[in-house]
Amino acid sequence: MVVDTEIAGIAVGDAYPVRIMGVINLSSESFYKGSVTEPEQVISTAERMVVEGADMLDVGARSTWPLADKITKEEERRRLIPALESLLDTIDVPISVDIQSADLVRESLEMGAHIINDVSGLTADPAMVEVAREYNCPVVVMASDNMPGDPLGMDAVMRSLEGIIRKSEDAGISPDKIIIDPAIGKWLPEKAPMYDLQTIDQLERLKVFGKPVLVAISRKSFIGEVLNKPATKRLMGSIAATAIAVYKGAHIVRTHDVKDTVDAVKVAEAIRGHNIRAEDSGYTVEVLEITSADDAQGYFAGIGTTRTGGRVMKDKTVYRVLKIRNVTTTEALIIKQEALSRGCDAALPRNAISHETDSVDLILMGTELQLKRLAAKLECQARDLPKIAGLVMTALQRFRDTTYRYG
Image (cartoon, rainbow, N blue to C red; front, side, top):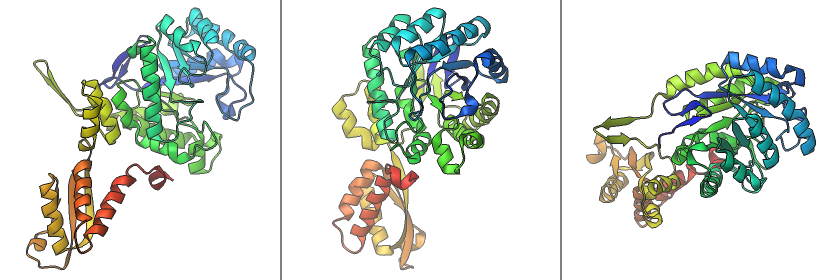
């Protein structure tokens, strides 16, 4: 679904440049000490980020790093309010506040802040939903269930965001004010790097929600674990991951390193190109990138199909092409025949048809539903066809096996 909205006066979406959100970090407890801005440096840091290309700024005074020392709300307010006041008087870009408590958000919005960034997904403070609805301001909601960032893997991220979006809209928050964040980072001890790697690799799945996607990748721990480097030496790893996230569909990038990130984002955008659409006389054809059958149900629901109908049709939306090696010519011909009878197909070399060779490679193609039905049929056949059927099913399952692909 096409994303086309406005966030605090800035056009955001598929047809616009990726927006850069610079981080003004007032928390000395943060995992990356190089990101901490001292009170006397707030304005100079903000001005530098804007010159370097920041479209908006995100101000936070409490570290969301799980291992950070805890501070009181009074200390958070003591750090935040003076900095926010200075920024709002001086800087001419939208200001986001990274806060999880409704009363401090309300105070910030009254002062003139433009955007709420709640890493708890509006769950830490029940009153946050009311504040967001009352001020009708853009709100960033991060995938969270029982605590910030706790979904493990992209399937869990999708379920979490679906629930948060539904609850937010049911509570009266305008659908075009919601920005989603897939919770990249080690938010809890059991969140291994493979979960963040999967999330970035499958970021295009978030398109089903039709919301702007914000990614916060900058110097996160998964980069450190891949590179075996501390936060101070993770810039190039951050740039690489950010470029991939933009290529996969991110609309907003939250970063400590604005200047370098801007260059990487521009190149990634150019390579990504435009979404494929065709329009004429009021008709529109749009290509949907569905890589997980479960996501298809969201697209179906968007046009009003029934939940039952969505379940029946979802496995028809994902097309797979598999290469099978070293199959006997007899087995290859059986696979071809059974594939055709189920609506899919198999490409065979010419010498398989004439039995001029003992074994061949073949290319099998079809929807997941067709291939699953084909495998079920082959399981009942002779020769090594049951073994081949098992391998086909294993290959299909491994598309969703986080440990296999990213562990």
